[in-house]
Image 1 (cartoon, rainbow, N blue to C red):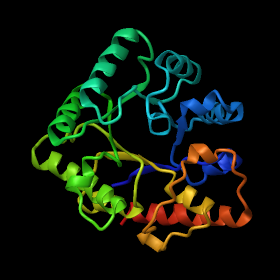
Image 2 (cartoon, rainbow, N blue to C red; image 1 turned 45 degrees about the vertical axis):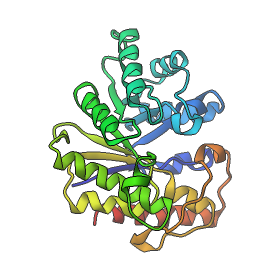
Image 3 (cartoon, one colour; image 1 turned 120 degrees about the vertical axis):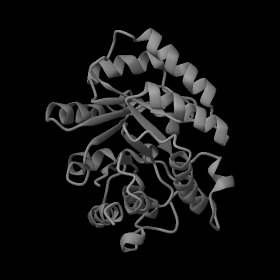
Image 4 (tube, helix red, strand yellow; image 1 turned 90 degrees about the vertical axis):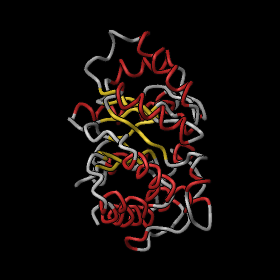
Length: 267
């Protein structure tokens, strides 16, 4: 099985990012702040590179303004976009999906729609998953649900996020709910070592992952410990460091960390 990866990167190395990314992953709120950021994804699309467009909920703590979002979708024509969701609220996420569908039933019909599973409990997450399983073209599961802190195991928050998503996916499979006929996307990560689990257990319809982890680590001068990744995670958001000028040493670290990440997801 092969999982495609994309590591969000600062503007200074976006052109280089095509060397280590399988597709391009864009944060819509940065389009309005940095014209050169939008221009990169427009060029990528014109060159045949697959582009995912994120509604920036992780960075903004709420989905980007839906009307402006629709305008950017129309302008960029990404291959895939994430329908506006609500953090850890399955009912409102479903409501937002239905509202979006009603508002745009004749729009973007050629684009892939990704639906994010949200919720605070097993029941809420499972119900939202069931809805997205029938409605979305692609299903996304995030790395940082608070739910994982009660179901995951480990000595700290990062380890519980890591094992919590693994256990959630395992339970969906065990309960017969996992939709093997639709592609899945894993949003972000706490610890990179998480992903070898899905390869080793042949969860073959996890199509893609996005995480800035190996790049942000390099921006903090942190090197992956081979295929074990890191035991810690820099707290900074890539979006807040979008103008960071990478040093030569940091660029070397990006090369190394992203290569190690590829090894992790092929073990």
